[in-house]
Image 1 (cartoon, rainbow, N blue to C red):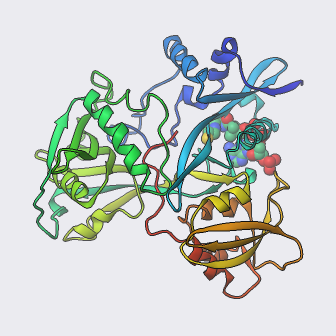
Image 2 (spheres, rainbow, N blue to C red):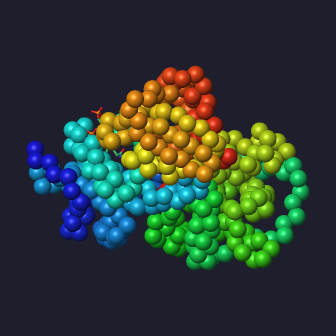
Image 3 (spheres, rainbow, N blue to C red):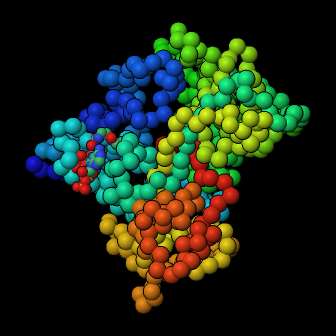
Length: 431
Ligand SMILES: CC(C)(COP(=O)(O)OP(=O)(O)OC[C@H]1O[C@@H](n2cnc3c(N)ncnc32)[C@H](O)[C@@H]1OP(=O)(O)O)[C@@H](O)C(=O)NCCC(=O)NCCS
């Protein structure tokens, strides 16, 4: 079997697309928009992708922001993946390049023969050559990507709140206003809003071209989920400082009827946050709100009279991170205090990362220097460092899980204090 790993040409792109899992749907993703309500068979059928849909994908894949990579076996595409170049906000609120691994699939008849490993290595090498010192992905299964040095770094949850339990502790006099708008206006508002949100929140990612144009595509989805409604909040000066996208799906099942689904929600300040949730949680002719892809440190719980009223119904990892150049990555983020530690890092793919690093961190930045003689305070692998990097996972937890080793008493607490963030890292959008 002759194996070749390389990008695809335009003429090969449809063949490439047919090897990708998204052509047949990704049921591990948060089902959208309404599969939660319409029963077991609700996942919208997408198989097979029409020729027209494939044509559109070909344009996207051959555009300058997508770097397709394929495994050819005896001249035919047997496996495929791709990288998109985005930015991620890291602690200190610097926005740095991230190679986003996306749409990975190997044809069933070629699995478990090492094709993914070859594709992944080629893509990560390419990121390193371009100076992308971080790579990220969202994982279909949690058992696949740790072996390539990725660790789960951000997390998300879906929750439900019954309208009768949604009384707020305090009344709120909104100096701004709420507006329902059409999709084209919402698209412009989301684009500006998300740029502001990502400048202020660790973990947030820049959006890919075309992200907002598809908002609330015309017509009613065949699955009964209903049209997308676009709600904006404007501050007292008339500037958009919050937005929500929600639906009111129809269901024949009384247990599922009356739910208002929120599938996107971003705000810049407490006033917009309070005003938008105030409307969405007390919406006439609904009995509950279901919100998807929400941060794990949702403040709404603390605003309600009944702090148990929000029920988390789904929780999972979201972004997995891989440090490709450990020195550049550790020097790119800010730290919560001052401290110095020697980390003994293992990395199966990149020997240049696999060494002892002295991290000298302070509030104004950090230096990370390879050291040979010094004894290590902590040993860990690059996958654990990926989980720790954004501050969303504590090294104390990993210590208690046996995932890292402490050689100097108290070193893990020092690392925890350095990495800690005020808010949980979160991604409102993916790639
Ligand atoms: C996941 C997938 C891309 C792996 O491709 P592959 O070419 O079979 O993978 P490889 O043969 O290179 O395997 C690499 C390693 O991952 C392991 N592995 C592969 N698929 C796995 C899976 N689904 N679960 C757990 N481990 C898996 C292999 O055992 C191998 O382990 P090793 O390095 O210890 O020997 C392929 O199984 C697939 O297309 N699955 C369906 C779609 C999917 O889940 N895509 C991922 C979207 S995020």
